[in-house]
Length: 96
Image 1: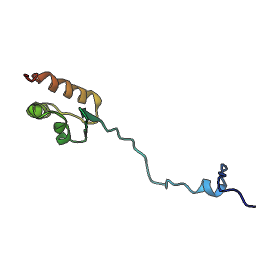
Image 2: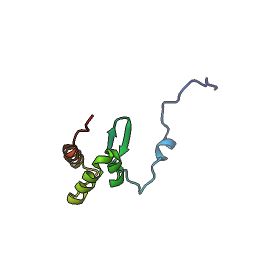
Image 3: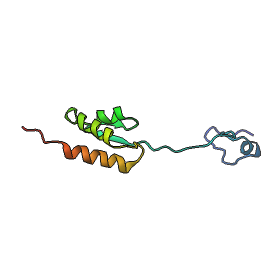
Image 4: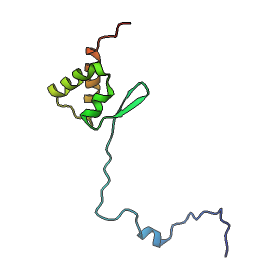
């Protein structure tokens, strides 16, 4: 019989159950990615270079120094917060 083009098939037949879109031997791993925002720009924290770009130019040496003295895991949110807090504490406000 004919059906309208707007109808949706909601039942799953046995042929669709046996055919998985995920083949055997694959595992799914969730990887968190953190981002730093400076004004309207957003920087992915996948490597040291991107983290350095997220800070203003006058803080570049402070960020690089923090990476040299501390082992920073960029997938750990606590270590990223410590990095941002420490670098921002070393910043001197700009004179007007």
